Length: 158
Image (cartoon, rainbow, N blue to C red; front, side, top):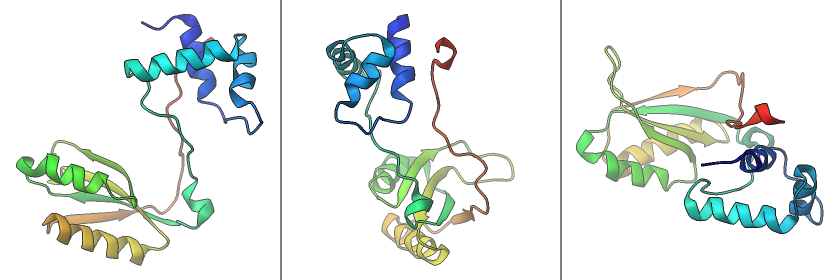
């Protein structure tokens, strides 16, 4: 169970990471704890599985990856794990998940593919379809980005 300090730490770690010589010290000071206590708690969260990783988020459009497509696939349920491992291993894919089929929509497997342009995304999807042995998919290209954020937890305690 998380206590109030855990929630403050998680909330603070979701903000922009300070680009300073001692970023964890700065975060700890903001929370009102020692740097060592912050590091100890982060290590505990990792060991317990409460957090899986911390990392940078690349703003793909700002570095030239201006095309992205939600690719919906028809994957036999018996191959879901196999196909999931294959697709999740590709650096061009940032999201990979299954959903139940819906009336009028038979696709059950989804990936978000990023590329420099639409053709690059289409070429990658075709290559991936061949590699996975899948023939039925549809690509839904983004036309405008309305919102792109990660979940923010425990913001009410700030």
